[in-house]
Length: 195
Image (cartoon, helix red, strand yellow):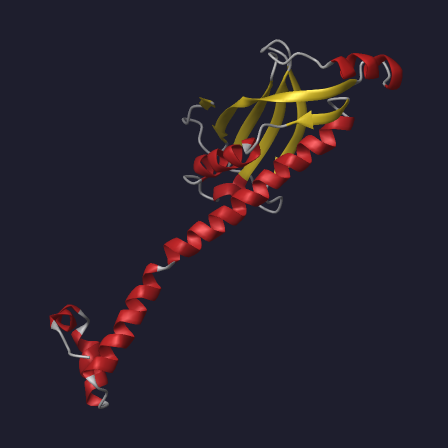
């Protein structure tokens, strides 16, 4: 390998020390190029970490819906649009990115909008990291898909198998609302994002 002018851009003190130790310039260039490449990789590691965090958060939301279906929602199944929890998790991460403790300082209140937008059922309160004092709150409001017709099978099953007030399925809409409120700043307003 031939030494090129790119060596002039590298740290000259480092070069002189390595040359004094009798290393070949080609070896020096290879080593420095490796470390330049390695130092540029943290963005890749951050992306991997963010993806893993996103999947964990999506799983927490799915578990929340699973627990709520028998208790709060009183239904046998919750129909969730494909990738809805993943989209919500990405938006939660985006809103948490500017906070002092990031997602670890988040308390997430999960609600389901009932038939009327004014009425919401509280499903769960999730603290991503309970050991950290919360710095902000997010309220996630799932919306029901009111456009879906109940199936004929549901009409037969409701009378035969379920107690009054117990529904066969709750179908969620692809839309949702996120409301952010900072807990450490009295001047910060509330951010409402609707999707």
